[in-house]
Structure formats: C-alpha cells, structure tokens
Image (cartoon, rainbow, N blue to C red; front, side, top):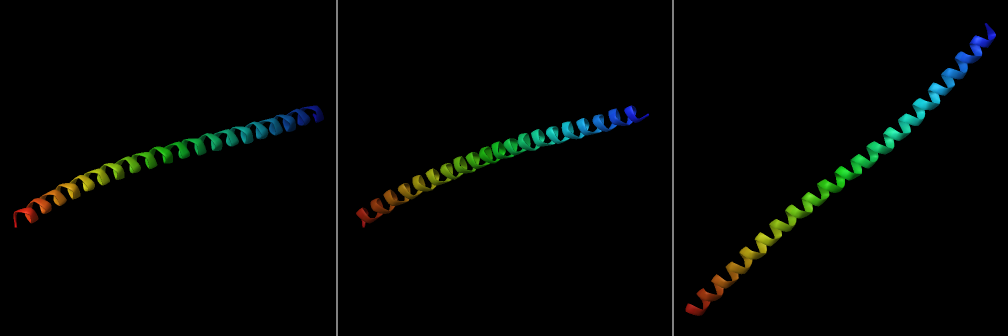
Length: 74
C-alpha cells in the first residue's frame, strides 16, 4: 500500500510540473500572439494615417494653386 501511495504522489508531482510547463508555454505563445497582433494593428493605423496625410497634403496643394490662380486674375 505504501508503494502505491509513493507512485501516486510521484504521478501527481509529474502531472503538476507538466501542467505548469504547458501553462508557461501557453502564456508565452499568447504574449507573442498579442504582440504580433498589436504590431499589425499599429502598422494598419500608421498606413491609414499616412493615406489621410497624403490626401490632406494633396488637397492643400490644390487649394494653394487655386488661390494663387485666383489672386493672379485679380
């Protein structure tokens, strides 16, 4: 009976250690996934901001040209 209890305790310890190792790996994988997702979101946000700034600068350039033409006519 005592030998059986030792095996059970050893099996429980091994299972607990395996679970802890699996949890550590899962946490690390989730952190990588989250950081990867954050990088992708940041990249998309920067691309969108770049497109908006390009459109705004093009509109400002056209407005400046139009204002210059109007001022030259007057």
